[in-house]
Structure formats: structure tokens, C-alpha cells
Image (cartoon, rainbow, N blue to C red):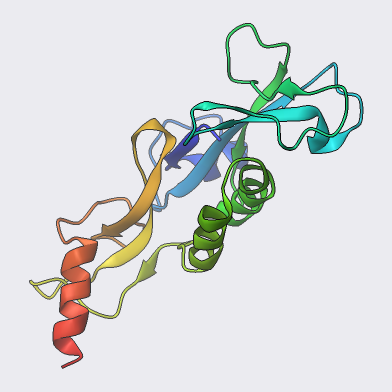
Length: 185
């Protein structure tokens, strides 16, 4: 996973429009996940049992998944690695396919049991499209909710002022929660 960005001209490029100048007449933008695929040319067929993973908390390589003689670092992102980059890809079908792969690989290899359980519980609540929320902001304007791309490949929840979820709102998640509880009486 390399990150996420807003692509406001995807439909023009996908439809073969040679004049994909970045202007989108419909004003629609897609959240696109950017990811890279690597291959290990030395792979012997032993699945995850051939690899160590980096433990972020202990800041060391963990070989607890290794099951045979071959136990190498899964270090495809490091300079000098033997892994080969196959390509960089855009996931345009939404976050669900990407999240499934994240849980399959990151969840199995890196997350501890508590992190996996936490992420699994909240995965179903993560937005997969721009949606209007029930309550309005303090000025009575509609508020929209979707994934917000942030720096260094991270994501968070975002509130927006438009129905394409391209214009961030000054109204925060915390403001919205306060509105919810004050309206619930």
C-alpha cells in the first residue's frame, strides 16, 4: 500500500478521452488506492512459512512464522532487497478489495491479536463512498462523510461540504458527535 489520492479525471481516462486535462465536467472524483506488487524470485512455495516480518512494536525482525530452512526478511521496500517490483497499480473498485488484501496480509503477518480484533470490528464502519449525514453543520449546511487521504499513505475519516466529498469541511467529526448527542437529548 502506497497511499490514496483523489482522482477527479479517472472517468475521462478510463473512457479513452485523449483530452484528459484534469477538468471533470460532472465534478465527481474517485478515491483511488495506489499499491505496489513485488515478487520474490527465490520463493520456494512455502507460503508465509518462508518469511520473517518486521515487528513495529519491538522494532526487530520476527521469525515466528518461519516453518522451514528458508526464513528470509519480507523486506520488499528496502534498498538492496532481492524482491522485484512487478508494478504499481490503482485500485479503482473502492476500498473494499484493498481492505480485504490488507487484512489477509498485514493482519496475518504484522498485527497482534488485539490490533487485528480492533481493526476487524471497525472495518465494517469504514466509509466506502461519499454519503450525506443526517445532521447538518452549525450553519445548517449538509455534511458529507467519506475516507480522507492524508500524508504518508495514511487515511482517516473526513467530513466534506459537497456531495462528491472533495471539499473538506471545517466541521469536525468531534463537532458532529457533539451535535448528535445534543440532539439526542
